[in-house]
Length: 115
Length: 110
Image 1: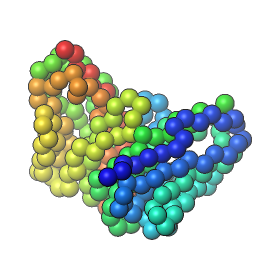
Image 2 (image 1 turned 90 degrees about the horizontal axis):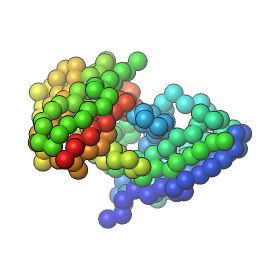
Image 3 (image 1 turned 120 degrees about the vertical axis):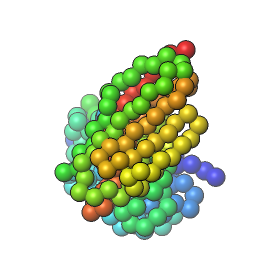
Image 4 (image 1 turned 60 degrees about the horizontal axis):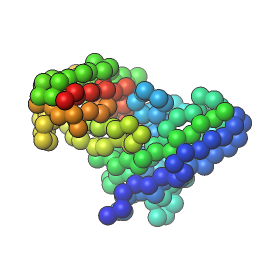
């Protein structure tokens, strides 16, 4: 059984650029959630995707957007990067209905640095 | 707005010295409370889900309990390999999101 994978592992961008982060869900999982984790803080919920539809969103501006594909893999896109976007971005997959958070499996994260 | 507060922020224990971590929450209705363990540079690892007050779950040296306002993670006779940040997260009935606390950084010295 393959776990949740994310790519790239690390990324350095400059302010104003755009970035795409990728997540491959654990086999059989139909729900993926994305989180932003600043250093020394708990993860903050960005949004959840269920069957390719966004279902639930945290307090993040529209420049944070996502996609979920038919194979349940997912992308997080961030436009117009700001310095405060520097963080560890985590995706988590699970099996369940829309809005469900039962036993999520997290990937190792993508460390984004914005200069 | 949902609030999840964990205490203490950091905890140092000697190997074998039992203790408890606290997670207090303020939500309009609780659907579930989760505990995760996070090692440096890694994603959180699922430990427990608790759904209703009075519920308890155990795994090795860890035991999680839940009341209507807080949850405790009890660590019995910890070992150095239990050193990690422990996160709790709350799933609220009326929302479609998970709210995490800031975590407790646990260090167990040999």
